[in-house]
Image (cartoon, rainbow, N blue to C red):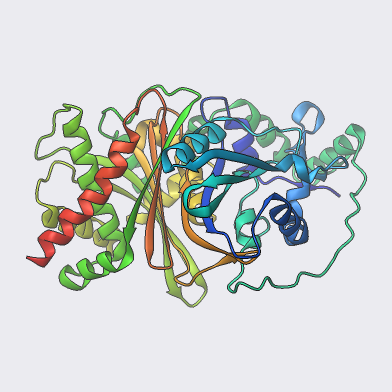
Length: 460
């Protein structure tokens, strides 16, 4: 029997449109080893590791009349060279040129008739470096059955681990009649399934929230939050099909120094830095900023050190962009995050995610999933902060120097910010609407300036 998409994953296909493509992205910068790192080597590495992610050779097949959710089926015409592509910048390629290429790649929707992912080897970067840019549809990435392809091509040493060889033979593709019969069988076992599938295809996420709220107990705080609109401003506008991309680099030790001085967490410091950058960005645009001005962020937080590994909490945080003092901003953020965790208010944000069918799966995918239905009413932008490994990683012997996330935009959101820590660095990826935020690079520079301001104030 084919593997049916969950209601969560199917919702990403139903909600996608040209303005809001539902794929996650990543930009990894590598230093070439002496043995080289070219397209053929990347292609061979991905081909070797594909058995670890069988979903990457599967495509989505719709059930006739949408009697049930779509299913994953093996792609009998799977062509790895279609998914792994080669690009190049004019030497010596600058960061601005790479960011422009990333923006253009991320603006295009994935082909729904093929497996929903792409990877690009970008050559020609200054300093003899190369970049690997990935795009993976949110319907695929659940962090368990189908992690991002980058996770399986990386190794902890320069010597690649051996992967058992596997001869892949696609399973026969089911016929439409077979899919209908299986859907009918499921309806017999679960009579409510058919009605739910029809609703999933026809209703938007907000209608689903209204329908489910009355039936699920313990969600009063979620409903209260939903009734309180986020502040209006330049981050919430009608967006286009095109994107801009910008990055910022900071060091993890600086956030740790702030934490040693003022307590809180590294994530508090990241949010305080983003608050300061957004404040300066608003002022640079001539926007009215008062002492009470805030920008509300949906902040999925991955927490390390639990008995079960990584756990994820989601918070709605009003970033204090109206506060001019960087240390006071930090204390505001720390207090808000601490109040969430101590009072249990984080349940409200997680409940919002569950209500829309966007259960919090993992890491950056959580931010993208959470943002997809509530952005206009509930928050102004999503900020995902994912703790990454603090040791160097390698792909086919090439050392990964930096890694930047690309978090998709939700409807009427001009900006999303992904943050990843890796090997002593904290890397920001700013994905922005091309028309609404022509100055995304300015905001990225202000992130680095905001950290300098905070560190300078702390050291006084």
